[in-house]
Length: 263
Image (cartoon, rainbow, N blue to C red):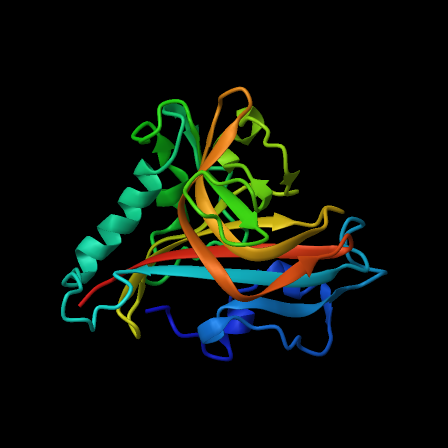
């Protein structure tokens, strides 16, 4: 079950440094199922915003995969306790990454809106996470992907329209033949507990304020194989209730939440 969104969460999920630089306008009618999806937040000022942001419309997209999907079903797996659920979050970050090397760390790759207080792992701890225990020896992960329609398999590139490389290894990540986002995949939260809904979660983010234009219908997380040509593979995907189009002057901020239900 997706983590429910209360009205105030729409603003809490947006980096405060961005909110402070925007002129608020009417909210967009675009929303996803269960309150998840695409939100229109406002337009950057033509005067006091950073030069690469001025006059741009700001949106954010929130995808969420919570495992198991429905713990109410009789045949569903029994949920974890909170401690093991948090451990699964840490394992995800430490294991599903690549390529392996202890010289790659998350120290300079945390989102400015990092959720490092309360029930989440602190920033200092997460900064020290390195790629030494990564599952992939040569592939690059985690990468974020945007699709104009549902991918039919874990390697289907028919509807792949944009991607963001993993921040710790962005400089060496092979290039794909689709639009590259202006930002890299960052860590926003690790080992957090949503006690209201009994979910432990981790959050990855990416952003694109480039002039790229593409249709957004699905988000995915996965890795990039360094073959010739390089090719992607996906772990998970999330479909929006309806597709939207990123325009040349739009600024998109993507949040991908992976959660583990606990009891």
